[in-house]
Image (tube, rainbow, N blue to C red; front, side):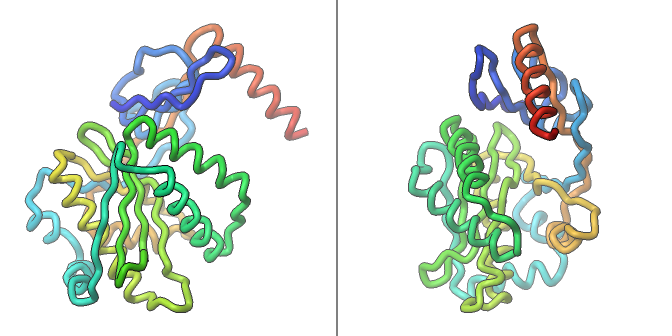
Length: 255
């Protein structure tokens, strides 16, 4: 179980708890991510895929689909390299650079990339980095970043948080970007395996039609299916009062 202290407001702690098997026993407004069973109010049930990092490198790669294995091997011939930063090694400049890259990626998908939303997103990343539970990795070709991955990192698990790439960039081959993306996932798994992590969580593998291609990409690495819960628990009288105010403001805003 990993506890992240997001912020304190009106004397109430806002916490994020990852992979809990039971309630954490702390007061505050608590968002449970990847809980083994429902805790408090269930926000959603999540389907994901996990890769067992206690297996050997050969076993992990052998579980990938044939084309996936080929693209991973092809990366060496294409001059793809990987870089990793975790914990205190992550600088403000690293976060700013990733967020700028991610915003351009988001825009390339035709999504609404409002600057204020990205400022909030950046603040979330800064919180994870400050707590020492964040990782940023990237794949380069000839010095140019083609793909970024970010992760939430616990004692035994690592969870894919966000990915971004130059897949839709007109001056880069989509084939090369795809190779770099697969290679980076494999390199990430080996990096975290070496660091003693046991579980690589692919960060969700939905069954909706709009995410079908992303899920099929993740499934090509041969992970095992797992369901868990995202929940919210409000613990303590002060937390209940603050949550009531938050809900009321939300209702008034909707009106």
